[in-house]
Image (cartoon, rainbow, N blue to C red; front, side, top):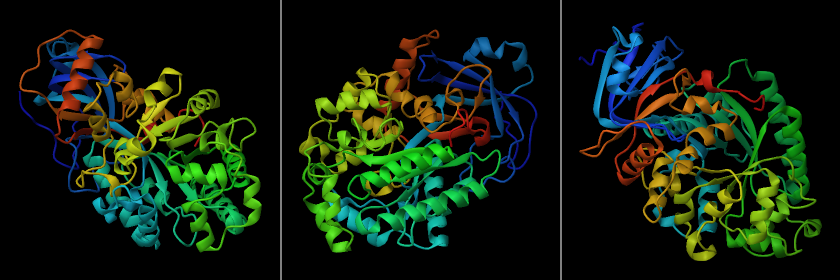
Length: 479
């Protein structure tokens, strides 16, 4: 059996048969050893991959057969297939990163900022790219690092430069081999509220005029956080998102300083607003009542209750907040390495994501920005799961939080991130397998064992196959 893939830019119509040590997905399908038979048609990236590092298989991919290798190779559709030998690899669906800040990638890891959230915010404000070409180059680098981490879909925060909300990240992503949502970030509080709302409204109008059928990346809205967006502005954002068909995301319950600001209208965030000249006394009407950030935003009578947003971080969660989140329809995006970077476990207690899942709250896992990561060569949520797995075993539901469930949170087709015959496939990752894998039949225990092998390693994932992003985009009419 020969590894006889076509040269870059060429297309071979034969199916591809992958022989691997194992394969699994988050839905409990698992085989060791495994065979995966892919149908490959020419796609938009077949002959024009934009980066130096290139997946072995590129095109519009359909998973024709998957199962034990000997069974798949004997099937009639495998006759004449070209073979990819990966006997040292565990194959999974490609990954989804539901929360990233790709425009901050060039700033690199900032270990000196560890534990200093106010200093971190100042560094981001002072050092983030401001001009269109610089923002585009930064996002492009972020996509390259994401692909290096096995990620083919992303919920990217299109950071707000000094000039106001920008569509440059969305326009950049639209021209690269990735799917997902570009959440346009904006600030709108106090004396800056009217200006911020006018600017984000203009950005949405521009997107409505420039979007194209078949775009793999949609626009979303990202009101930054409760300390930089007023309750009235959140309500406006929820209404705008509903009218324009946009997904909504926000940072929430991230720090003690945020808790103090919402509960009493005091603390470092109030001081920053005063220094920036945007604090005004009328803000006290929405603050100072002792509510938690989660209750402030999602509780009874709150501005985005019913909007079903993605709420990012949620490090600071009370028992009452768990009930609020369970009733709200929100999805929690937890970024473990970011929380560890800012010592959230020490200041706020262990993250309560398991309790949230037990109450039916969807929990997915993102990376946040390169600034708080320890993998400068890649941006991948598998490394966030590996951090969690050091202290507690993870189940397949956690892996769904960086594959099928994370895809669904971005409005993508989750079936593109599962290993089921007949599915259009977003892509495939290969992880280095342990030296020995015991042969097993297809069952959930096999999938769990393979997941533990992947999480117990520290080697980077390899993007073995890349599908057509448009084939997994836009399943629910939102975004």
